Image (cartoon, rainbow, N blue to C red; front, top):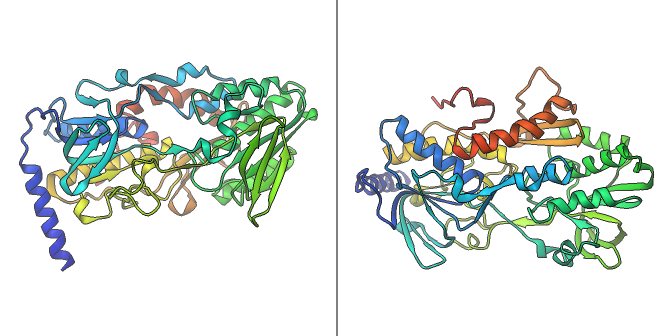
Length: 444
């Protein structure tokens, strides 16, 4: 019964794809629609176009549409560098229209609803777009209001509260670090999903080093309050980071979730694992807010019960056979790996190959994503611990001849100098494959 159903779905999709020639798509009908123009959306849209061209099946200009109403595209990993005083925040954004080549159509709207059974979606203006294949790369949302008092504290220049998790607030982080002369510096991380799970402590390590280099460390107490049970999810790196924490005199408070801020009295309130509440005085407070799926995705037919687009973790194709022309990557997907730009780099070519194969044959290829992701953990100026791992929280390291559990200067310059340049010059153009950039990935 299941085999017959899959054959019927395959036949239906092949018939659906064959109805369209390679002529220019009409205004509301596209071969491929990509939702989201972040790192995942731009990268995969360009790679899909190139993949068809490489197979001698070139798409026409406008056959691929990117749906996103954003004015700017942001290099979000750069916000830690801004908060550390290493980069101006203006270098972390560009006008979105400047990054979308003419060969791709841009629909400057957001999605309201999905109708995967009809291979269509509706935008917030009421426009219906139909597609042969859909890629969802919408990212996640930051729930600033999930912590009582946080939105008000962030716009108050005297609150001492900042965050590297937005363009508008990342420079306030540096201002607060530079202006602090004594007192308590708190750095927080919530339980659950966040963009780059190492980022909440990256800025802590950089602040601590800055305090030491400017002879303020003996007057400032640095504490890390995290909703997680350990410093990092991968034991190899967590052990190193916890050892650094103890050696450098940083207080560690685990399974403590920040729930409210009284910026007038400089008081942070945490909820502990046992349900008890504790108030902590702060002078400077860096906040990593809770995060989750976007509102327009919640409850839609393409997501799981948690609100993430439900995909096979290897193929990145939707888990429902009847939605076999739907794919997702990046932060919005259900793939059980850390939500980082490096995860997108590894996912994009796999998704591209499988989408191409489905549109050509009705079946995915042998391309599989193994859960690879990376977290370049700044541990001070001139040093970085490069955590790389895959599904199962198993290390998968690029430099086996080096001890990647030890922070070093080479990794630091990858993060500070190479990665930003590679992002703007290669990744958003679909030309960056991480450590496989020189040799285009092969899935044979």
